[in-house]
Image (cartoon, rainbow, N blue to C red; front, side, top):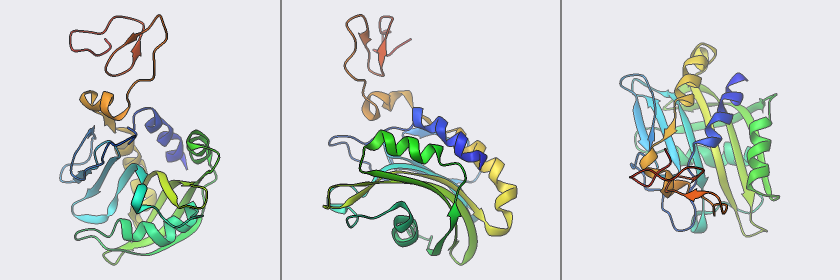
Length: 224
Protein backbone atom coordinates (compact mmCIF):
# COMPACT_ATOMS: atom_id res chain seq x y z
CA UNK A 1 0.00 0.00 0.00
CA UNK A 2 1.02 3.58 -0.58
CA UNK A 3 0.73 4.30 3.13
CA UNK A 4 3.83 2.20 3.81
CA UNK A 5 5.93 4.71 1.90
CA UNK A 6 4.42 7.49 3.97
CA UNK A 7 5.40 5.63 7.13
CA UNK A 8 9.05 5.98 6.13
CA UNK A 9 8.75 9.68 6.95
CA UNK A 10 7.99 8.81 10.54
CA UNK A 11 11.35 7.14 11.10
CA UNK A 12 13.04 10.53 11.09
CA UNK A 13 10.68 12.06 13.66
CA UNK A 14 9.48 9.31 15.99
CA UNK A 15 11.24 9.46 19.33
CA UNK A 16 12.92 6.45 20.86
CA UNK A 17 12.52 5.31 24.46
CA UNK A 18 16.05 4.57 25.62
CA UNK A 19 17.89 3.94 28.84
CA UNK A 20 15.71 4.60 31.87
CA UNK A 21 13.28 6.91 30.10
CA UNK A 22 9.70 5.95 30.88
CA UNK A 23 6.77 6.11 28.48
CA UNK A 24 4.00 7.56 30.65
CA UNK A 25 0.51 7.19 29.17
CA UNK A 26 -1.18 10.53 28.71
CA UNK A 27 2.06 12.45 28.09
CA UNK A 28 1.74 13.93 24.60
CA UNK A 29 5.18 14.71 23.16
CA UNK A 30 3.96 14.94 19.57
CA UNK A 31 1.79 17.20 17.46
CA UNK A 32 -0.77 15.69 15.12
CA UNK A 33 -3.35 17.10 12.71
CA UNK A 34 -6.37 14.92 13.45
CA UNK A 35 -9.99 15.68 12.55
CA UNK A 36 -11.96 17.69 15.09
CA UNK A 37 -13.33 15.54 17.87
CA UNK A 38 -10.76 12.77 17.59
CA UNK A 39 -9.25 11.40 20.79
CA UNK A 40 -5.46 11.72 20.95
CA UNK A 41 -3.47 9.61 23.41
CA UNK A 42 0.23 10.25 23.96
CA UNK A 43 2.73 7.76 25.37
CA UNK A 44 5.66 10.07 26.01
CA UNK A 45 8.68 9.37 23.83
CA UNK A 46 7.11 6.09 22.74
CA UNK A 47 4.64 7.66 20.36
CA UNK A 48 1.01 8.55 19.91
CA UNK A 49 -2.36 7.20 18.84
CA UNK A 50 -5.49 8.94 17.60
CA UNK A 51 -8.99 7.60 17.07
CA UNK A 52 -12.38 8.83 15.93
CA UNK A 53 -14.50 9.66 18.98
CA UNK A 54 -17.64 8.78 17.04
CA UNK A 55 -16.29 5.45 15.77
CA UNK A 56 -13.53 3.66 17.73
CA UNK A 57 -12.86 1.43 14.70
CA UNK A 58 -11.16 4.32 12.87
CA UNK A 59 -7.72 5.71 13.73
CA UNK A 60 -3.93 5.56 13.56
CA UNK A 61 -1.13 4.37 15.83
CA UNK A 62 2.61 5.11 15.85
CA UNK A 63 4.45 3.50 18.76
CA UNK A 64 7.85 2.12 19.61
CA UNK A 65 9.59 0.17 22.38
CA UNK A 66 6.65 -1.88 23.66
CA UNK A 67 6.88 -4.89 25.98
CA UNK A 68 10.24 -4.00 27.48
CA UNK A 69 11.95 -5.33 30.61
CA UNK A 70 9.53 -7.25 32.87
CA UNK A 71 6.72 -6.86 30.34
CA UNK A 72 8.46 -8.82 27.59
CA UNK A 73 6.56 -11.25 25.39
CA UNK A 74 7.50 -14.95 25.26
CA UNK A 75 10.66 -15.85 23.36
CA UNK A 76 10.39 -16.23 19.60
CA UNK A 77 7.22 -14.15 19.25
CA UNK A 78 6.99 -13.18 15.58
CA UNK A 79 5.30 -10.06 14.14
CA UNK A 80 2.38 -12.24 13.00
CA UNK A 81 2.08 -13.89 16.42
CA UNK A 82 2.11 -10.50 18.12
CA UNK A 83 -0.54 -9.11 15.77
CA UNK A 84 -2.96 -11.99 16.24
CA UNK A 85 -2.36 -12.97 19.88
CA UNK A 86 -1.07 -9.96 21.82
CA UNK A 87 -2.01 -6.76 20.00
CA UNK A 88 -5.75 -7.21 20.77
CA UNK A 89 -5.12 -7.25 24.51
CA UNK A 90 -2.66 -4.36 24.28
CA UNK A 91 -5.37 -2.18 22.74
CA UNK A 92 -8.35 -3.43 24.72
CA UNK A 93 -8.12 -0.52 27.13
CA UNK A 94 -10.84 1.62 28.67
CA UNK A 95 -13.99 1.53 26.59
CA UNK A 96 -12.38 -0.12 23.54
CA UNK A 97 -12.35 -3.88 23.23
CA UNK A 98 -10.41 -5.39 20.32
CA UNK A 99 -11.31 -8.94 19.31
CA UNK A 100 -11.09 -11.43 16.43
CA UNK A 101 -7.73 -10.16 15.14
CA UNK A 102 -6.73 -12.18 12.06
CA UNK A 103 -4.07 -11.57 9.45
CA UNK A 104 -5.39 -11.27 5.90
CA UNK A 105 -1.97 -11.28 4.28
CA UNK A 106 1.40 -9.58 4.00
CA UNK A 107 1.61 -6.24 2.22
CA UNK A 108 3.43 -6.19 -1.10
CA UNK A 109 5.72 -3.43 0.11
CA UNK A 110 7.93 -4.59 3.00
CA UNK A 111 10.48 -1.74 2.75
CA UNK A 112 9.54 -0.11 6.07
CA UNK A 113 9.48 -3.39 8.00
CA UNK A 114 12.82 -4.47 6.55
CA UNK A 115 14.44 -1.09 7.16
CA UNK A 116 13.38 -0.84 10.78
CA UNK A 117 14.27 -4.47 11.50
CA UNK A 118 17.73 -3.87 10.03
CA UNK A 119 18.10 -0.76 12.19
CA UNK A 120 17.04 -2.68 15.32
CA UNK A 121 19.54 -5.54 15.00
CA UNK A 122 20.19 -8.98 13.59
CA UNK A 123 17.70 -10.66 15.94
CA UNK A 124 14.83 -8.41 14.83
CA UNK A 125 12.04 -9.37 12.47
CA UNK A 126 9.62 -7.02 10.74
CA UNK A 127 6.46 -7.50 8.70
CA UNK A 128 3.82 -5.20 7.22
CA UNK A 129 0.45 -6.93 7.34
CA UNK A 130 -3.17 -6.35 6.50
CA UNK A 131 -5.67 -7.71 8.98
CA UNK A 132 -9.28 -7.88 10.05
CA UNK A 133 -10.61 -7.45 13.58
CA UNK A 134 -13.43 -5.89 15.56
CA UNK A 135 -13.52 -2.89 17.90
CA UNK A 136 -16.47 -3.04 20.29
CA UNK A 137 -18.08 -5.41 17.84
CA UNK A 138 -17.58 -3.11 14.84
CA UNK A 139 -15.89 -4.99 11.96
CA UNK A 140 -12.63 -3.26 11.02
CA UNK A 141 -9.69 -3.58 8.68
CA UNK A 142 -6.17 -2.38 9.25
CA UNK A 143 -2.66 -2.33 7.89
CA UNK A 144 0.13 -2.47 10.45
CA UNK A 145 3.91 -2.70 10.46
CA UNK A 146 5.28 -4.69 13.41
CA UNK A 147 8.96 -5.16 14.28
CA UNK A 148 9.81 -7.61 17.05
CA UNK A 149 13.21 -8.21 18.60
CA UNK A 150 14.22 -11.61 19.96
CA UNK A 151 16.46 -11.44 23.06
CA UNK A 152 18.42 -14.65 22.77
CA UNK A 153 15.65 -16.84 24.17
CA UNK A 154 14.90 -14.59 27.17
CA UNK A 155 11.88 -12.95 25.60
CA UNK A 156 10.70 -10.70 22.80
CA UNK A 157 10.16 -6.95 22.61
CA UNK A 158 8.10 -4.97 20.11
CA UNK A 159 10.38 -2.27 18.76
CA UNK A 160 7.97 -0.66 16.31
CA UNK A 161 4.22 -0.70 15.75
CA UNK A 162 2.53 1.64 13.31
CA UNK A 163 -0.55 1.57 11.17
CA UNK A 164 -3.98 2.74 10.13
CA UNK A 165 -7.41 1.18 10.59
CA UNK A 166 -11.03 1.87 9.71
CA UNK A 167 -14.45 0.18 9.55
CA UNK A 168 -14.16 -2.75 7.17
CA UNK A 169 -16.58 -1.34 4.59
CA UNK A 170 -14.91 2.10 4.64
CA UNK A 171 -11.22 1.23 4.80
CA UNK A 172 -10.37 1.94 1.16
CA UNK A 173 -12.25 5.25 1.29
CA UNK A 174 -10.75 6.35 4.61
CA UNK A 175 -7.16 5.29 3.89
CA UNK A 176 -6.02 8.57 2.18
CA UNK A 177 -7.32 10.66 5.09
CA UNK A 178 -5.72 8.35 7.63
CA UNK A 179 -2.42 8.54 5.79
CA UNK A 180 -2.53 12.34 5.96
CA UNK A 181 -3.20 12.20 9.71
CA UNK A 182 -0.30 9.81 10.12
CA UNK A 183 2.08 11.94 8.05
CA UNK A 184 1.29 14.97 10.23
CA UNK A 185 2.94 13.46 13.34
CA UNK A 186 5.88 15.53 14.55
CA UNK A 187 7.94 15.27 17.72
CA UNK A 188 7.73 18.55 19.66
CA UNK A 189 11.10 20.35 19.65
CA UNK A 190 11.05 20.69 23.45
CA UNK A 191 11.24 16.92 23.80
CA UNK A 192 13.73 16.19 21.03
CA UNK A 193 16.76 16.17 23.32
CA UNK A 194 14.89 13.86 25.73
CA UNK A 195 13.60 11.35 23.19
CA UNK A 196 16.35 11.48 20.59
CA UNK A 197 19.50 12.76 22.32
CA UNK A 198 22.29 13.59 19.88
CA UNK A 199 25.18 11.22 19.37
CA UNK A 200 28.72 12.36 20.10
CA UNK A 201 29.43 15.17 17.68
CA UNK A 202 32.39 15.39 15.37
CA UNK A 203 35.25 17.70 16.30
CA UNK A 204 33.99 20.46 14.01
CA UNK A 205 30.34 20.24 15.14
CA UNK A 206 28.45 21.94 17.95
CA UNK A 207 26.57 19.68 20.37
CA UNK A 208 23.19 21.36 20.80
CA UNK A 209 20.24 20.02 22.78
CA UNK A 210 18.43 18.66 19.73
CA UNK A 211 21.26 17.44 17.49
CA UNK A 212 24.80 18.00 16.24
CA UNK A 213 25.03 21.24 14.26
CA UNK A 214 27.52 22.90 11.94
CA UNK A 215 26.58 26.31 13.38
CA UNK A 216 26.62 27.50 17.01
CA UNK A 217 23.55 26.66 19.12
CA UNK A 218 21.00 29.44 19.54
CA UNK A 219 20.29 31.19 22.85
CA UNK A 220 18.02 28.35 23.92
CA UNK A 221 20.65 25.68 23.23
CA UNK A 222 19.04 24.32 20.06
CA UNK A 223 20.18 24.30 16.46
CA UNK A 224 19.01 27.26 14.37
